[in-house]
Image 1 (spheres, helix red, strand yellow):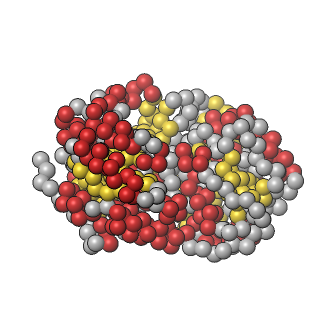
Image 2 (cartoon, rainbow, N blue to C red):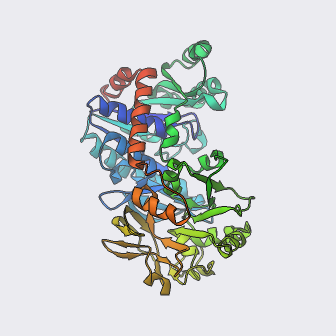
Image 3 (cartoon, rainbow, N blue to C red):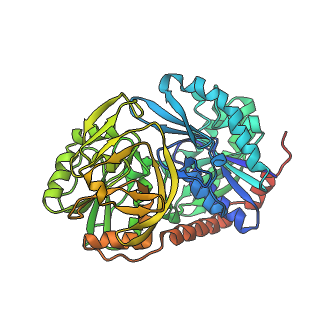
Length: 485
């Protein structure tokens, strides 16, 4: 048994992808591997076989290990909502709401539950690969920390620090992290990885040596820009702001970037379609008038995001798009927005209240305190479909008599009589090849028929191969298996 933790010099340095790649590399070597993230903050989540939810990144990392996702892999999940609050999920189940002011105090008692999950995973495998959150250099957050050094020291897990050379200043980032940590935290770090390198590695040889000399840590590898990472589902919405879109002779599918957008990786399989341009529309820009399909995504704060949608004028764009004959698809919170009204009588996602919807579907939604978390299979638009449900709310009304899908549990969603407006609670629907083909056919696009799951699996193997070339993996395995207190 052993464990190794990757922490970063900052957010978005590539920890999630590197853990996934190392999980696959170690699994390919015949080791039993499990991923672990003590505390995650994300509105992109996945449903586990044991009926809970964890961060999307840990579900991907489980896939890299060739095992089923489990709630122990991410025991604490924070899902940001409106009004500076986050839904607290512990061991896959909602445990309440945290406010910005009480977050530090509320997380302290969770360390015991985090360690219990970690020990259970540790007993199942040869190596647990742990992903930190943010950076240990955020020493203002150190008191009560359970995500980085607070966990590493409590569990006795050695740490390798990841620096992102693409953003610049990586020497200062790694050496500066060493400078601000207290001596006991710094002692947990045993080395570093430099990620996202472009160009000739010889040009950074001196910089690499300077980091080793100034930090006292050994380098475990200089990792090139991993192009195959673009084929993996992303967990952090910050990547949406950097998404490059194709131009030319493609049909456009547009999705507005709501402030509390959730499970936006639902749209990732559309990137496999050569006839599609997927445009994530940021605030301040209109929804293009030439879109063939507008997708309203999931939301962690549906009423607040509906208000934000109206502030941007996107409601006017969507209604005009519909009047021109365009198609609209709402997923989960987006489905709720398409109805006549949304009521939140218990204040589940923010202040209690009611909001008028876009009125494109003849349905109404009442947010409920019970959260639906389940895998789902069935048929939709005449095609087989699989995915998962993750929502708090019940939707009723005349248009539900024309369900979007018929699942094993019963009907799901709604559609208009002309089939141009569709709503569903089913996440992951575009990963179903035949359903994707049927839906795209409605807007005049011939699907490539690409297998999304196979594409993700191939990307993991390609990333693992790159890491085998550029990282001292035997040394990392040896470090993970050192005797710990």
